[in-house]
Length: 281
Ligand SMILES: C[S@@+](CC[C@H](N)C(=O)[O-])C[C@H]1O[C@@H](n2cnc3c(N)ncnc32)[C@H](O)[C@@H]1O
Image (cartoon, rainbow, N blue to C red; front, side, top):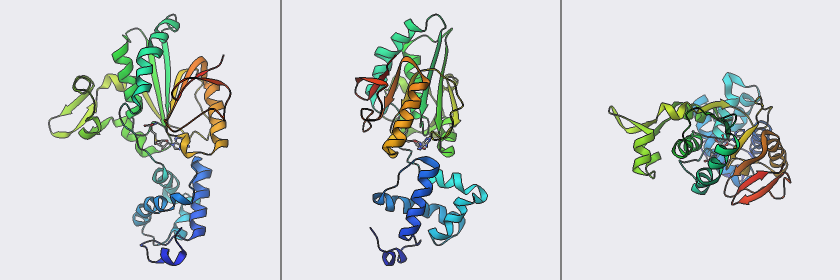
């Protein structure tokens, strides 16, 4: 940990007590736990905000968050969230969709022809678009009412998801036929691509703080909540997993991230594979 005198030599001053207050505010508004090991990361993220608002120390910045001056609370929240994501991240989850979940849904949901999925903590949209591509590649959706809800707390990333515009490097690892089939090129901007409207039509992007009330009713056939609860403490995780169980239909699936686990926190699911869980009826 840096001493206050070391902090004085930095561009912006952040005392131990400032860091503590920032961590408390982050926890209160997002559930994200910022332990001492995150101090440098927090400094880096806040430095950009301080430069923007023209302040020299975190102590002067804190009241802007607390009073939400000029909408600073959501800018602070956007700054402290970690949004790392990619297309077809953790590929085995998409294999599960195409090999097990989708064939199952074609049978179980054939009467109502309705499918509901949720990408909770969708970041810039690569996750819900990967789900949409997998559905389009695995079944004929004609005559089906298939919708994927994509939510995130961070309004900046959500907006990127909604636009569906990505740098070419973001789709570099995809198979050429997938790139060609699902992304549009722009001759005036050769370094970017846009997802095809037919993928966008399957997805509804909405801002949602997982800690607050959930306005949707469900039930969902499946929920992706990957690499989100890793930032929360065990108590918040337990509450969320229980709420996910309430939102899923009986036998619905919850898919979490590679370094996350449900075992100690929730007894409403059975494990059916690596980080894939099924709601117990
Ligand atoms: C690391 S990204 C994961 C993206 C994607 N699910 C994946 O695995 O590739 C975590 C996302 O969770 C979001 N998040 C963090 N706290 C949240 C909260 N309280 N409510 C909703 N989203 C939250 C962040 O904004 C961020 O975009």
